Image (cartoon, rainbow, N blue to C red; front, side):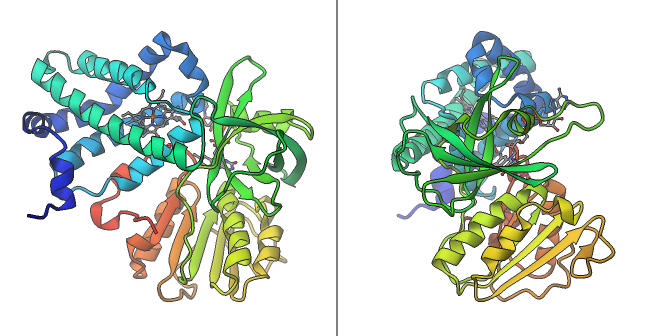
Length: 418
Ligand SMILES: Cc1cc2nc3c(=O)[nH]c(=O)nc-3n(C[C@H](O)[C@H](O)[C@H](O)COP(=O)(O)OP(=O)(O)OC[C@H]3O[C@@H](n4cnc5c(N)ncnc54)[C@H](O)[C@@H]3O)c2cc1C
Ligand code: HEM
């Protein structure tokens, strides 16, 4: 007898746990953010060393707490509901983020203890021994799958999880726009660069002037020179009284040629695979950092593949890497570039005014879309393209923060790996 993928993933849970999870999933979902919001302070109190691995900006805004809550609920739901969307891409997203931060299997015991403790604290007497056991099983199934995926990624990339970072020297600093710099980095040990797929990011760890240590992810915006990789960083300004971005401000104000940065191996699956499909790369703001490496890669490997780049920014002056993308694009046989600016110079007749509008641009058949920018922008791009008949399976996206979108996209619209 053959079994389906759905049957396989549901049979992971014991029958007793399955019944309890079905009965309690909605209560846990309702309280999930309360649970994860309680989890983080307790785990940091007991393990202050984790403050140096978790992005404290995402803690302050609550985004990481919401992402963890959404992922656990979505994972549990797909264990008990055959019609729930595939969880594969969420699993990959988390595993890649974890390996870029050097997360190790033994840390799952710590997280499990405090996360399940927070479930008990928030739900109180509702957590009977049966309920506790069922959610313990869900946690460890999730953890086991993540640990296995991460072990495979560590091995494939030859990363030692106990030493996941490598020192890189800043060999060039380029002022791209008033708010954007590029830092060109070379391994300080003199060794070759690791393999980098176009669209992947690295985690950069910095020691901040206030004594704390923090990681952030930056897309490898170029690896055009074989011995060097480039990151491109937009300075994040605090709005409405919020503080300025810690790491982007530090990189802008405190890092010069000759300085060292600790950098992870490349990670992430926002990656163009070889195929003949035409590509639409739709970006906004800092999302441009994903466009240049893809265009560079195609110029090197598939110059015949048609590419459309569409970018939105505040003004033409804020549009980082514009000239470089156009320059590399000229090496492609079929390359079209569009831009939209909220404020347009009167003499700039080749760009569009306002937000990106993809309703009119000619789209080739079988177009494959890669989009990166703020969530509202990507939602807009996606809905315009769905309305134009582009299947959801051909639209890939990258979020420059914890992915709060993944668990919310309905089944038929779920992005599927290429
Ligand atoms: C896969 C991936 C790839 C990325 N690639 C790039 C890239 O190529 N280029 C790039 O520029 N960025 C990229 N990013 C984003 C980058 O990792 C950082 O998130 C960004 O640089 C901001 O970090 P920061 O330390 O400067 O800001 P943070 O200090 O983390 O602050 C972030 C936001 O939180 C707000 N905040 C912080 N503390 C508080 C508080 N107490 N109360 C209220 N609000 C608060 C800040 O005002 C700010 O708006 C990427 C992210 C990911 C996940
Ligand atoms: C089953 C257990 C776990 C689940 C479900 C989980 C889930 C997640 C999710 C959903 C994200 C956000 C991914 C994204 O960027 O979109 C994330 C990031 C992260 N996880 Fe985990 N995780 C687990 C275990 C762990 C463990 C054991 C550690 C180690 C201490 C850890 C440390 C981190 C860190 C440091 C981040 C990045 C946080 C940030 O950038 O704000 N996680 N995890």
